[in-house]
Amino acid sequence: MNIIMTLTQKYNDLKALVKRSYADENMRNEIWEYITGYILTDDKKQIQEDRLEQFTTFLCHTGRLAHIDIVLDATDFNKYSAERDKAFVNAIEKAWPSPWVSICYGESIETDHELNRFFYMKKEG
Image 1 (cartoon, rainbow, N blue to C red):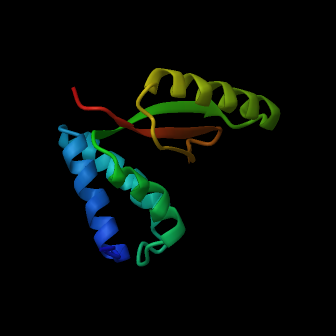
Image 2 (cartoon, rainbow, N blue to C red):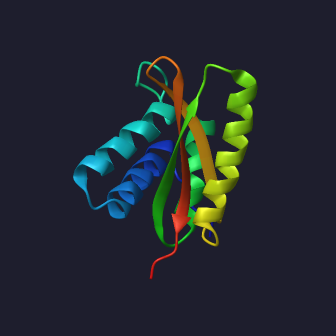
Image 3 (tube, helix red, strand yellow):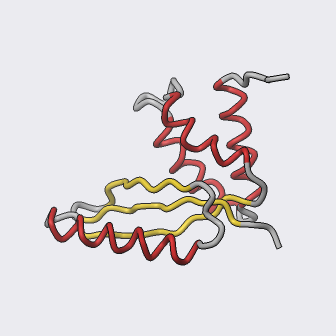
């Protein structure tokens, strides 16, 4: 029997995964704010289904959500692209062999840097 989950159910399950994965309340809140900044519309009133789907792929796996932060200089596009590619590969190597699914997206910080968070599932134990 296939159960079709609503967007709200997926959103709530993702929130529960974040809560289960991060023991520190401040970190948990920061991660949840970062994720909702990506999956909600700019006015924070609607869920963007395609973006939520990227994160709900984590719900099919056991383990806990984890992340690696990558801060890049965003003032030089060519340098930024090369740095991001290298940092992304390094993040995958650090997470290996866990990342069944992974997501990396950036958010501008300050005026000339971008914070990229590489999310993956970390096996328990």
